Amino acid sequence: MRTSPPNAQPDVKKHFSSSILLWVRTDQPRQTGLDYWKGPHSGIIAATPGLAEYRQIHLAEHNPGRWPATSAVETIIPGNRKIDGVAEVTFQSVLSPLQGRKQTALAHKDEINVFHRTLLYAGPPNSSHWYDVASPAETVDSRAIIYLRRRDRVRAGDFRKYIKRQLVPALTSTGVLKELRMQTFLPTSTPP
Image (cartoon, rainbow, N blue to C red):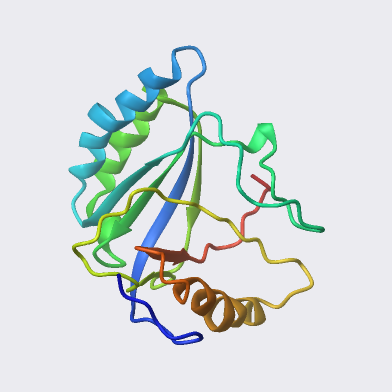
């Protein structure tokens, strides 16, 4: 495993990605929905022209969380916001979504077979940063997803600087990460 000196910036690759938060249908066993997502639905997405990577992150049904209670920080996921998984879609280029319109329409039509709710988080081109923190031969055993929301009174530029200059070096200098990906999303028009 490679470790970086504290505050060193690891190599980064920029991508055009989106993340979709997913809630499986509740009128069937949860595992049935997750299996359908892994199988038939995944096949539809994987056939999309212009797709660089499609990743499914299935989350535990009962996740106690590992964050200590922290003042002014939401460290426990409220029941109404608990998701079953995240689909990460990374495109080859900015024009790729146009190439895959027909396949995307098929996937959208198929969503009713597995999900009762989906929420798309989209970001501008090059807003997905993949940091080189381990050798390509190392496999990821588990993943943690952390969503940070910028407070209204904090400027977007200051928030990005904090992430790039403080949070990323602090995480990569631990020497235990095998993967670190950060995405910046466009503001939502309604709360999730």
